[in-house]
Image (cartoon, rainbow, N blue to C red; front, side):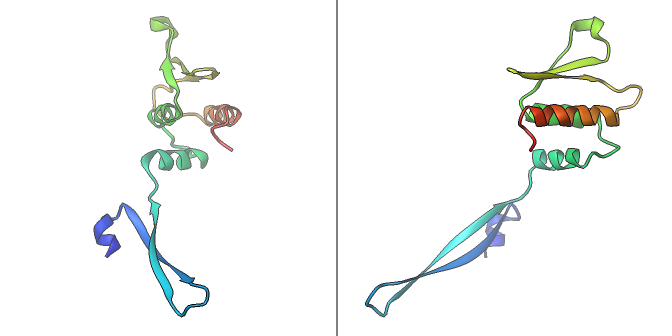
Length: 123
């Protein structure tokens, strides 16, 4: 019944709560659905990043940082492949956009991980 209503977006489980009234023989049984959200795109990207894959793309890195509230910034035409991601008062994250490919280097992944951990986004 629940799976047809939720169409795969939510999983439902029923819990039975029995309340026994003091001094009576009546038992009140209620059903309360427990919903568990499926993992969204941002959570999947975060989990992928935390595994430190060797094929993490710059586009994925940009979406990850934007998900944490960072905005891409550069110094105009003279910045070349250097990009800065700013997030208010948090320390900016500087990256080089990989070229000719689109795969982020391992050292850059570790740098971003450390910066996100220091900013309190990752535990």
